[in-house]
Image (cartoon, rainbow, N blue to C red):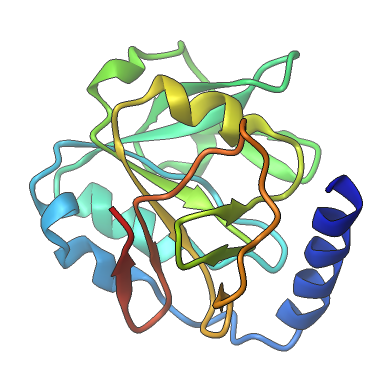
Length: 179
């Protein structure tokens, strides 16, 4: 199972080199789930991930309380409220994380999840660290993964019992809900 996931991650990362990094996922702001939410967890994209910079700024501009993840030593995540200022971020390896005190994550209503690909049952393939699979079950939030067009698979993605499912995925053009 681990080898199948690793190969799939490698293939998707290779394919993502040819994706348009100017694509935007701002259209998800108009979804009923996000429109109705006050508190949203998101992430800061890096590398070939779908770009979240404009989406995050639009969420803040819309008056949403934005939470960003911060990696703990045990690879779990904690959530910190972010005001959108780059000065309130610190580099941790390849990623930027928020500075400040961890917040109460129970108020998070929507979580935007980094996703390499998903299948039509809501199974998600992440980066491989398992951090979101640890963190998502602790939230009672609607979960949406961001992917590029062509990364929704008709074939079931290899998954294990600890893998957290998504409620929906978004491409630059559409939202597909699973649950």
